Picture 1 (cartoon, rainbow, N blue to C red):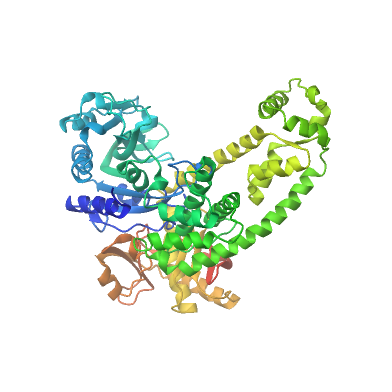
Picture 2: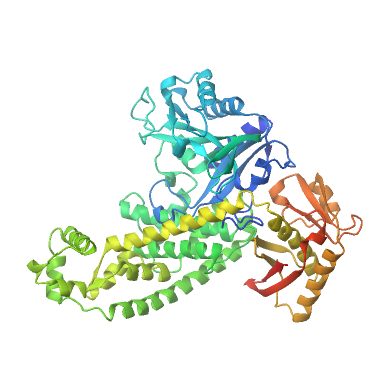
Length: 640
């Protein structure tokens, strides 16, 4: 058996011995990046360096990155899906390439983790019109003793990585698989469709640059980006197909068992509910416990937290937990993960407070949802109780209703005459997919609860209609996520660079006007505006806002130089550089100074990008100042 701490440390130590600098996990909340709500991959915070910018810690890096992926929230509940996860990753930024990368990966798997080579298999890119078959990668595996039959050539959808947008670094992947079935020998030939082959690692071989929607050229800087999911790899190494049976989740599951009086493993419905609660509250705890401290709301990251918490509460009720419980699960998570991620311990009071408040708000939302359901149900004409019960007690009723709804959707004739129900009666007793989805989306009602409410009124709901609405919503969410990521992977555009520099001026001005208690709590930049969150207990007066504007605009008019220096973290602190981003960059940091180096207007630790002179920023104007969360204010401003 191997623990999560042992696996995490083995990975970091192994690649450190290979010359990789260990860097801390970045915040879950992207810095000055409007492209995505959360960090969803280890490479995301490193994009500037993949594009050629020099990293302070060198060309070889390794870490365990906190990640959140929200596209599959509704799929969580099986043995392997997660909203929050840790991505073990190492990178070569223009240093070693394919051969060395695969040699290191193979050595880590077989020597460090002691996996049997006869249980390993690999996939490489099969080639297409834009790039040839990756024979170099295949030959590298063969030279390590991997039989040709254990190497599969797969198409672009399986073995190619590129940004969601129209440009950026890209290239083929080579994935690593482990035969997870302990009851049988691994087959001689690798069949990627056999689910017993479980992916445990992926080397992205960035040797191309995508220049437009279908144009590629050799990259100026070739990179390696390895991603190894901690949860999945840990489960495989411990001989289980269930990630929730590892030490990353077992204490959380045990707490849910204690709260519910139910036992994990007794019933798949119970298992699913417990997995959802464990996953969702783990994710919510990490987001709220992040150094940027997001709280539940109806917007952006706050909406995701609210959705996760409320879904966990719903499934808690299904397990019979009818008291406030989410904070107790969170306390278990903090105890479990707090040594590795001390920000959880630091923000424990905030996490607990938000969870307690959110459960109270959800109870109110349920009451509001019941009122909304009553309004939706009121115009419907119920089937007589006798006829309704007769149908509901009929064997195969679900199949009967499915066929009726399908014919109704296709505008074909149908009847329920055997139950004495006419077409007109049925049509008047139907809750549409849109109506049921509204209750689900707006008030957090699970479909089971909506069905129960409808049946109490002798009304019918199309499960397929509801599922179609859920699917449409998921597609819109994925499209929006892809659209956001499109602009952010390489968003070093002129306007983004201007706004980024303006945030430095704004922070310096706020500290001059309000005091040294002001620190940046978060920022978001688009092509239209900047949004800046900062610590301050009360609303700014009109006079204070005018002073801040005047200071920023004076700095712009003075055409101050913007200079950069690389130095140790200690040296940056001696210079009194604002250290709010220090944890992201490790021991070496970049310090940006605006103005005279001996008496600067602003000096911050940051990753860029920035303008060279302030004059090109134009005119700075505060458009709005408002509360963001307790003790945190938010300014929205524009440059013109």
